[in-house]
Amino acid sequence: MNLHPLPAFDVVVTGRAEIASDIVLLTLERAGGEALPSWSPGAHIDLMLPNGIERQYSLCSDPADTARWSVAVLREAAGRGGSEYVHSTLAVGETLRVRGPLNHFAFDTAPEYAFVAGGIGITPLLPMIRAAEAAGVPWTLDYAGRSEGSMAFVRELRSDHPLQVSVYSSEAGERLALDERFASVAAGALVYCCGPSRLLDAAQAVADGSGWPAGRLHLERFEAKAAGAPVLADAFDVELELSGMTLTVPPERSILDVVEEAGVLVLSSCREGTCGTCETPVVSGEVDHRDSVLTPEEQADNEVMMICVSRAACPRLVLEL
Ligand code: FES
Image (cartoon, rainbow, N blue to C red; front, side, top):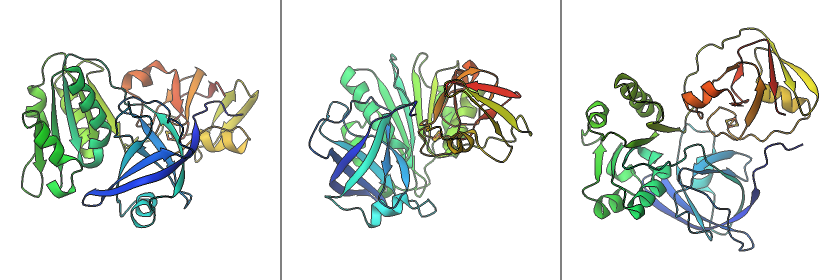
C-alpha cells in the first residue's frame, strides 16, 4: 500500500558543469523525452543514485521549462557519499531514477521579499528571485559564503542585479550582520532563508528577538536541526487507521522503522526529518514534532508529522496509514 505516492521516473543527465569550486550543475531530462512534472519555486527532488544513495536537491532551473531540470550539487567530504558520486562518477548520458518534486518551502505572494542565502542554500532561492523579478516585486538578496569562488551563481546574480544583491565572503573578512539586515526589512516583506544550520538558527533567533509575526520568516533546512530529548522516554502505541494495525514503537526505534517492518509501505528518503517525504496525516493524539521541515505553526496544527523522526507525546497516536 503506497499511501503518499510521489511520481518516480527515470531521467538522463544531459549536462554537467562545474559552476563554482566543488559545485556541479546537473541538467536532467526525462528519459523518453516526455515533459517533466510541474513544480514551483522552493521544490526539491530525490535523486536515487546508482550507488544506492538517495539525496534531495533543490530545483534551481526555470519552473516554466518542463523539458529540463537543473540541480546544483555541492561536494560534501563528510557526507554519505551521494555528492561524491555525483562529482567523481556521474557522467553525461547516465540514467538516474528521481522522485518528486516536493515542496516544503513554498513561495508565497508578498509585496516585497528579502532573500538570505548561505553557500549552496542559494539553489531554492534562485527560482524565487527570478519569479519576484518577473512579477516586478521588489527583492533583495544577501548571499554569504566561504569565498566568491565557492558560491554558485554569484557572478550572474551580482552583474544582473547589482543594486539588489549583497555578497559576503568570509575569506575576505566580510560578514552578514543579520540583526542589522533584518531591522531594515520592510514591514510586510517575506524573508526566505536557506543555508547551513548556523545561519538559519541565527536568522530564527533574530526574528524571534524582533517579535516578527509567525509566517514572516521562511527557512529551508538541508541539515537536521538538534531536537533535544523526546517528550516520552517510554514506548508508545501507534494505531494505523487504514491498515487496521496497532504497533508498539520502542524508545530506540522510529515510527517509520516499525511501520515498515509491519509491511506498510510509506515513502521516505532522508530519514532525518529534512525532506518531507514521509509526511503522514495525524488522526488523533499529541505529536512530539522533531523534524526540520514543518513550520512551528504547522507543527502546532498537529495535522501531519514526519514519522522518520517525530514521535508521540502521548501513549497512543492514531495515524492515517
Ligand atoms: S524521510 Fe525525509 S522527512 Fe522523513
